[in-house]
Structure formats: C-alpha cells, structure tokens
Amino acid sequence: MTIQHRFEAIIQRIAAAEKAAGRPAGSVTLVAVGKKHPAAAIRQLASLGQRDFGESYLDEALDKQRQLADLSLNWHFIGPIQSNKTRGIAENFDWVHSVDRVKIADRLSAQRPADRGRLKVFIQVNIDREQSKSGVMPEQLPELLAHVRSLPRIELVGLMAIPRPATTGGQPRLAFDRLRQLRDDYATADCPLPLLSMGMSDDLDEAVAAGATHVRIGTALFGARE
Image 1 (cartoon, rainbow, N blue to C red):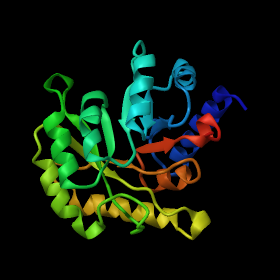
Image 2 (image 1 turned 120 degrees about the horizontal axis):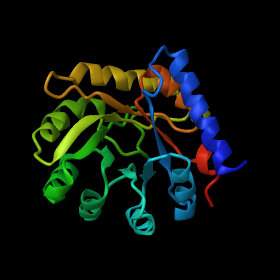
Image 3 (image 1 turned 90 degrees about the vertical axis):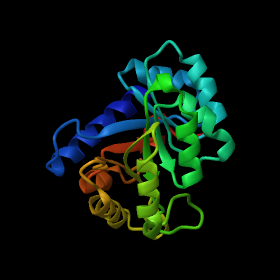
Image 4 (image 1 turned 180 degrees about the vertical axis):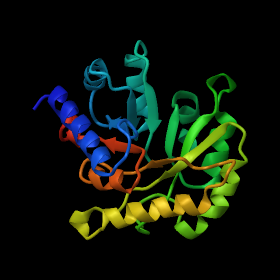
C-alpha cells in the first residue's frame, strides 16, 4: 500500500470516528509521526496536504527540518525530553507534547526565541503509572500545571498520554477517559486546557470518542519502521 493510500485511509478513519462520536468534522488534528522514516516520505505526505509532523529524536528531526526547509510545516516534538536537548527543541519546534517536569518546562521557556512566539506545550501524564513511560503522575499534575502556567514563553494548551496498549492488558478507552477527566478537573477560565493529545495507530478511534483533539499516527501512515 502506498503512502497516499494509507493517508487517505487514515483521513477517512478519523472522519468516521468524529461522526460516530457526534463531533464536528475537522475537530481532530492528525500529527504524522515520521520518526525513523526518511525526509522524502515526509515530503511525499506533505504534497498530499499533511502539515503537522511529529518527531521523537532531536538530531534526526533537525536533519529532516533542514532537508524540508522549503516547506511550510508544523513540527511537533513528541518524545521524552533530556535536559541537554531543550534548546534545540525550543528553537526549532512549534509544539511539544511531552513536558513532564518543572526543569524541562523552565528550560524550554527560557530558551524559546522571542521572535518565534510562545511554544505550544502539552503536559504528558503517566496515565497508567508505567515505570517504562515518561509523564507526571496524576496526583502531581496540579503542581506542575500551576508552574507551567506561569512561564512567559510557553502556551499551555492541554494534556497528553500514551496508555498501556490493549495487547499488553491495557484499557486505552478508560485511560483516555481518565485523561479527559483530569483536564476537566484542572481547567480554569484563564487556562482552559482545550487540547488532548492521545491516540495512535491502534487506538485512534477510541481516543477520538473520548475527546482527542490530536492523534499521533506513524505506522498506519508510513508503514513499519526499519
């Protein structure tokens, strides 16, 4: 199957999920996750109209950005963040989905160039409390939210989670519902946390039903990674 066929299938799948959930058409943003795939594949997808792309590895992402500098794309950093990578992320990305501690948020805000506008940030929640995953624990979320809200170069837009897959005993729909409830619990009038980044290739339908605004799709678009 070609990238074009996969892209069309995912667009149709998202539209069907929106309709089934009674949500407006176009209310879900597709973030195409290109990690471990070449810049040429991203260029091909961009030629079909895709504009939002997610990457997890900074050096790989910066190389792709250089190769694709002639395109107008929105770049999302979605992977775990090390302290020594924050400057490159702050300077070169439009969105960050994986802020999970004060130190990282502080560095991203301090290192964000003034001429780039505020960096749009999701806080990642370890919704299933997995030791193998990044994310703030739910009970520590209020403190982190309060801190990130105060930072001058960051726009806090919502929450992100990667639930335990159903194939390993997880219940993604319940996890998505819990994330949405956390958002509802901690949203305020001046920081409503309107966005939810949740759902990948295997569970995007459940994520959309639970209120996802951004789904991060890799394999279903690009095929298996090498």
